[in-house]
Image 1 (cartoon, one colour):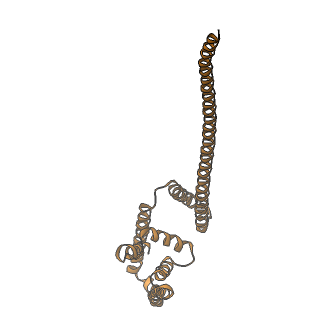
Image 2 (cartoon, one colour; image 1 turned 135 degrees about the vertical axis):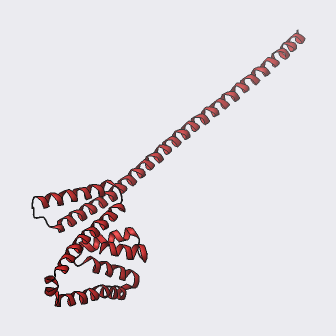
Length: 232
């Protein structure tokens, strides 16, 4: 069913993208009920709302119900036929191939990051080991553990982003503080240079005034000597 759903919804109808199809498979496998019914309910709700989900679910359930009901009426007679028995064996091999091909397609479209590769490898190894050693471990635990690890990774990424943003804010604040201190130092140096310039101007003025006074006094001395000579 996974291969048929992917071909009809993603490749032919193009109602959903492949990433969304992967999410549908994860939700449909995790929730109770067959994967075909759960997928039809989701896609029908997306395309037509509540009525779309109702009729899409009915369209998947009703034909299967009718076919299985008719087969159940003659099931014992079918099994007694040798050709039917061999046909069921061939169908089982085809079902294994369809499941394997759908899994391979899903693995190809899976994002190649460390978490996905590690979780998939660990699940395959554990399922194989538990099957070989006849360990009773329900598949629901694989789903719960995988979902819990996914939620933990999501929360961890959010906390990491918040911490990185907080570090950037602190660095910006420290940078602003450094700029303020530099500006204060520059203002202090400017004030000091202004006071030095004012002092130097005052000193120059006092020196100029002293020079003028000395010049006046030097000019006044010859006049006084001339007056004294006249008097003599």
